[in-house]
Amino acid sequence: MVFADQPALADIDKMNTQDSGICYERLGPALDEALREALWEVEQQPTLQVLWAGTPLRSAVELERSD
Image 1 (cartoon, rainbow, N blue to C red):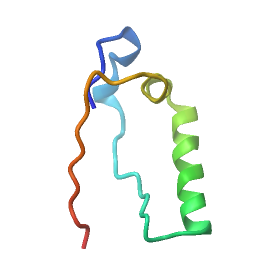
Image 2 (image 1 turned 60 degrees about the horizontal axis):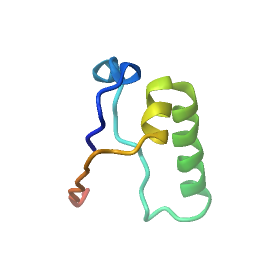
Image 3 (image 1 turned 180 degrees about the horizontal axis):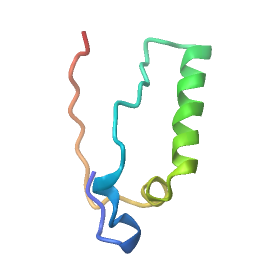
Image 4 (image 1 turned 45 degrees about the vertical axis):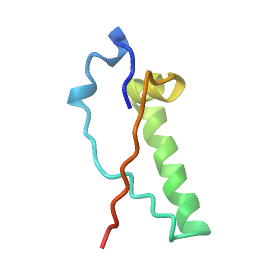
């Protein structure tokens, strides 16, 4: 995703980025827990809050099978 430059996003390159851990094959309680954890992460990080509320200028999705 590409967002417009904003002061609130200045430290985005310093964030501890990692795989979200969300796997759509794990339906039910496991998926619920993964989504709750993702929401908790957003609530802890001001930069993620700005991204969550923002509208990207453009985006692209590339899917790869995880084995």
